Amino acid sequence: MSFKIIVDSCCDLTAAQFAKGPFLRVPLTISLAGQDIVDDDTFDQTQLLLLMREHSEPPKTACPSPAQYLDAFEKSQANDLYVVTLSALLSGSHNAATQARAIWLEDHPDTNIHIFNSCSAAAGEVRIAMKLLETAGSDKRFQTVVNETAKYISSMTTLFVLEDLDHLRKNGRLTGALSVITGALRIKLLMGATPEGEIKKVGQALSIKQALSQMVQLMTQDPGHV
Image (cartoon, rainbow, N blue to C red; front, top):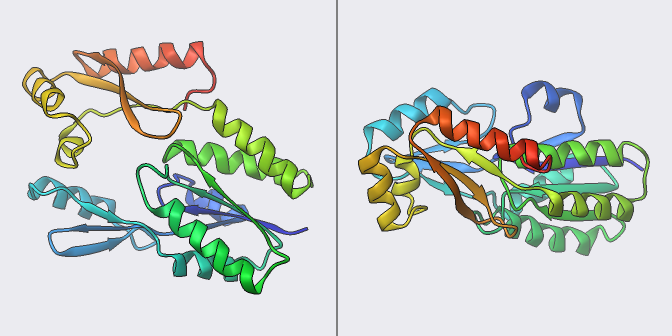
């Protein structure tokens, strides 16, 4: 059985991995200062960062539409489709993929499609995509791949450190009090995700080096951290 792994563009697979593997990407769109920046092969990270520094309003992201996922299903030409999305609590990408699945199966009932809520983002999505590549590439049955990957997702814990929390403040991801404290004291937060995929504070430090050290310590204690 042929298979494809479809990810939204928050997934940090490299260009080389996309070129070699059975991966397809569905882009998110970032809107800022009247410009819509599509997160596809035309994406210019430098341009986005400059715009973010120049404008006080937060960038807004638009999740892929169901139509974009349907287009990816069409391009895949595969019997088994595995879709990995941003945390459903952070984006509508998971919901759009789920809607697309229902529409697709009306006309293609023999296709196997599973939508995985990563409960994470970025590197977390990469780990899930690579787990799917390993498992589905071993010629395991579709439901076995789904079950093993779902178990793998439930064992993952997400950690990250940001040197600059300005964009989290702008987007309301920090509470008012926490925003004031971290801004005034230049505290670096060690952040993570709840099992459901919502951002939470895990720890704090006075420097980025100390915050990264805390993160490494937690990662060595639990190999499930990403």
